[in-house]
Image (cartoon, rainbow, N blue to C red):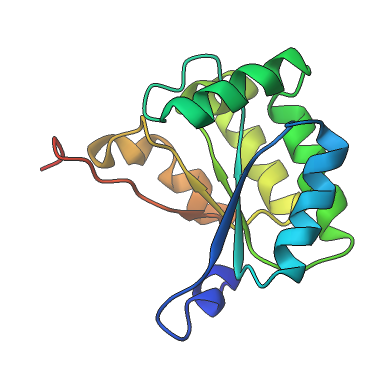
Length: 153
C-alpha cells in the first residue's frame, strides 16, 4: 500500500501545504517537521513557478518570494531528500507541467522515486493529457493526484 493510501486509510487525512522556499529552504524543511509533529497525515509542497495561473493570490505571492530566494525544482527535490532522512510522512508536489518538462520528465520521475516523493498534482495538465507522464509515474511508482476541472470531460 502506498503511503498516500495509508494516509487515507480512515477515509480522510489532514494535509498540510507549504510553498517551498518561503521564507527559506531551511525553514521549509523545519516547517515540514512541524507539520508532521502537529499531526499532518500528508504534506503537500508547492514547487515555485513564475506563472501559477491555477493558484490564488496567497500562493502566487509565496511563489514570487520563493523564486526571489532562488528556490526552483532542484532545490525542492533537495528539501524532500533531507526530509526523508527523518520522516516517512507522505509528501506530494503541487507543481506545474513546465518545471517537470524543462527538468526532463523521465529524470523528474526517477529522482522523485529516489528521494521518496509519493505523488504529484499538476493543475495545468488536463486529465485527457496525462498520458504524457503516466508511463513514467507508473514505472517509478509516483501517484498522480489528478485535478479535474470544470472543462474536463
